[in-house]
Image 1 (cartoon, rainbow, N blue to C red):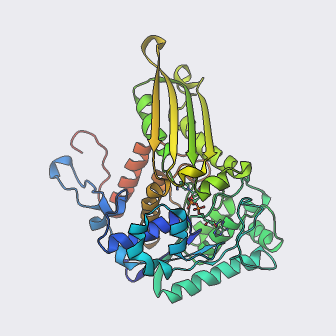
Image 2 (cartoon, rainbow, N blue to C red):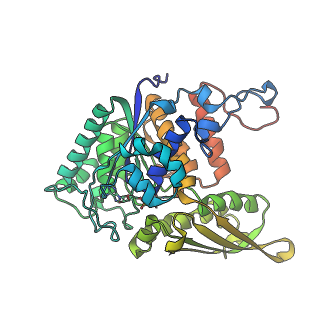
Image 3 (tube, rainbow, N blue to C red):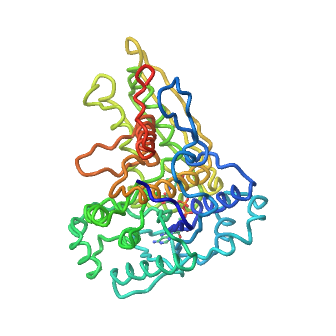
Length: 429
Ligand SMILES: NC(=O)c1ccc[n+]([C@@H]2O[C@H](COP(=O)([O-])OP(=O)(O)OC[C@H]3O[C@@H](n4cnc5c(N)ncnc54)[C@H](O)[C@@H]3O)[C@@H](O)[C@H]2O)c1
């Protein structure tokens, strides 16, 4: 039984930069009929129900009680005090022409002061930052922010989606292992607790679903997993799957399905937005490198197919190049091998817009996590792996990276939530 989506849904984003403002402005443009929500499954995709011969493929949003776009309200935190119009203008993803009609709406969205520490994102300096005696107080201040924002917006429900900068790479530490160790760490200002973990903790304590769009650990630690299960709160992460990794998880399953070998996969990127500037710092890049690098190994299974993939050399490079702004370009050189070991090459040159690909993911995650909460699904939502470069899965589970398997799992979970049979793709079933 899924509770109905009555009242307003508040979408809170820690980080109100390029991705968050492109998402917010985009939802408003769609609501006003100025634009189409391309890239969003919740708005555009159909879902086959029953056998193929039934010819029944309604829209996902007509089958499940998703929140209506008209009921979304927005708020968030940032270390810069710019309102959403200033932040969107600075990010320069959407044109002035597209932003102008939305200016009054966007000017009304002001970021709350952030829980921030420069040691975790070294390239940024901002003034809109909370001051507190310890991390426990910061987490409590974030909880107050969430409650106040819900009240201000008269929202009945909320979701929190981390759209903040990529924090430095951290390994799980002792204070991340249990709820009590984490809470002790908050009081003692343990260095292993990053700001994104304060937001995750605050959201879960307020019984609000949390998703992490960046590669840093955030909620991917036993303490917060345990807390989310205990409080029946859905969690998802990590790192939105957008440009180059999206292409990789489309192409690699195809090569493997045809038993083509791969000797090497060299991936390089240029991007010039603030995200690129943050990733230019080696410790933040390390976090991204880890999430980007695991994808091929998991899809290709070199242990099972050593002849085809054991020698694979995979390299990922990200280069900060300001002239391109958010209009990133990525190149992939793939050295493949076919019949009788004859070598071949594939070159992919993707000219994408980072935040244009990320914004519909934020929308779908907000609506699906809210649905999950109303369907009483708690803890890690592995069926949302479709949206992430480095899917957050339960201890002992193997993350699935193949986009097509992820898609089948997502759709079958939606069928299950709608009280329908899963589709197995066997004959007429
Ligand atoms: N755009 C994509 O395609 C894509 C894909 C995958 C992941 N991501 C990740 O999404 C995140 C957002 O990307 P973006 O392009 O919007 O970056 P951005 O730099 O434009 O925005 C991030 C914002 O987060 C703020 N911030 C940093 N630490 C904060 C904190 N502790 N509290 C509150 N605000 C904080 C920054 O001030 C900045 O305004 C990044 O981590 C990026 O790596 C983006």
